Image 1 (cartoon, one colour):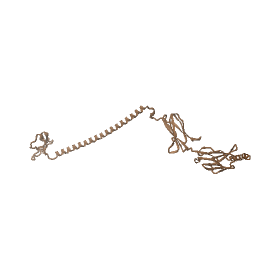
Image 2: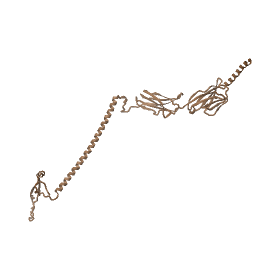
Image 3: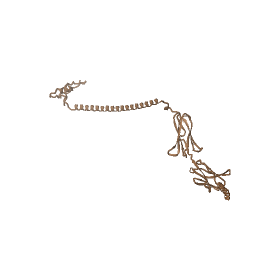
Image 4: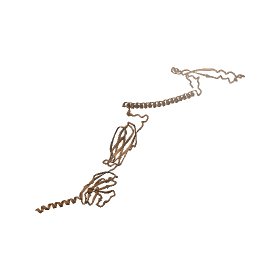
Amino acid sequence: MEDLWKGIPTLLVILAGLAASGSSYQILEGPKNATVLEGSEARFNCTVSPGWKLIMWALNNTVVLSLTPKEPIITNERFTSASYEVDGNFISEMIIHDVKLRDAGHIKCSLQNSDQDGSAFLSVQVMGELFIPSGNLEVTEDEPCNVTCLAVGWVPLPDIVWEINVPVSHSSYSSYPEPDNPQSAMSILSLTPKGNGTLTCVANAKGLQAHMSAAVNLTMAEPSLGHLNESSLPTWAIILLAVSFSLLLILIIILIIIFCCCCVSREDNKESSYQSEIRKSANMKAKTESMETKTSGNDNYGYSSDEPRTSKETSALPPQYYELNVPKQLSPRQPPPETTGSEAAPTPRPHVSFMMASPKK
């Protein structure tokens, strides 16, 4: 029994030796999380106790770099290594060159024939473009205006702020992602300038000391002649101007209508006078033809009807007088009188008068 108790300390010493020999192959400190920009370098460190035989680095469960105590085993030129010794411990550093967006994921450092490993996470950000579409601005003093800044192709979207080097009476801005493009953001600055200056849009990458900026110059435009600044007018003056313009427009429309009516009336009057003149000419021509018809032919103005006339017919027709000059007829047997040296006086003709109520053929 005593021999058994004497053998226990010896067994404990052997177990302690085995534990000490196993601890020489352990990872003392694994890599840490890192966030880098696309196209830059990413570095991860793994501290291992002495006695290791093989160190393996994996990206998203794929071994990309291996190290032996003699030399590294490089399978991809973008993944290289560096080695350090601190306080007797070995530090292995993996360097990822020209980081791609697809490199984002889990990084793991492990030892051969060991269940221990150290892991970290790699985040990759993309800085896209930043610009102000309007370019340099020319605005009116004390008149509100908006300035837009666009961040396109950023992963993740940046934080956008404004640096205002312009005297203003009011300024505010708001930023939000574009609904049609998840990798783009927009920021709108609203301000009321009072002088010239510079506006700068700044986009900060999240989690990194990296930023991008875009600036434009803001200048005051000189007011044009006849420019009326409505903001300087009181409300009653604006209402009065609006009513005056409305009344003036109505008056112009009424004058145009009256002018058109007068033109139409003049045309109608000209047409009616022209038609009346035509009618008069036609009537005069008809009367002339009637008179010529009545006077043409052999009319017997000495005929008098024996039929008694009624009082109505007599009163209706006024008496007419006709004078006939009947030439004095010479006897066929008598020769015409001889004329002397002086021309003989004209022979008087007898004058006959008739009173007739109405001539009859």
